[in-house]
Length: 233
Image (cartoon, rainbow, N blue to C red):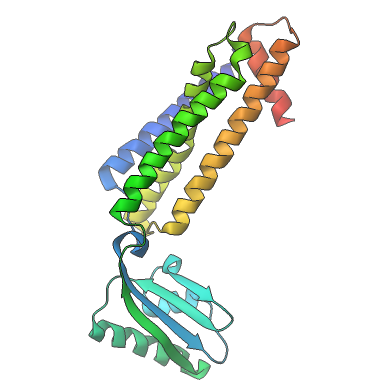
């Protein structure tokens, strides 16, 4: 086995352990989608300002402000009292009064991603992971003389965990020191990572299978290396 794989292995293990430690210490900073809060939609009848400008004016994180349609801006924040609501409107009015603004709606919302959805999501993830293992074991059963297909399935699950845990650790740091909150958009991003991770793993496994079926006379480690280099190409 080439030395580069040992180096990358220890780097990956180190990053994963560091991410787990950061998650254990700080946890994730959940946003309105998880905790509930207030939603304000404001119409800018003239020129609509940049999200960054609105963020600086209101003191709200950029990730909690979004464009809606051609003229509206949607602000998600913690649960506001009526006094805080009026203070926020005054800040926006003073800063962007020339844009001829008006409030379209203000309402308090419950968590979009509630406890029941979290529970069902975890169950779904477990079922998907089991399905992936069964799928890989079935598709790559021809390699059973060289390597257990169940071991390949387990390796795919480990790769999935690695690819998700490290970004979670990074966002735990960003939440602690940068105030970055986790929203429903982040959940979609994690699911995207999972999809690409599975796809990449299957592609590499498939190349390993093809090279073994061709009868390449090399050690298993060399076949894996050859397959990875071919995949990169």
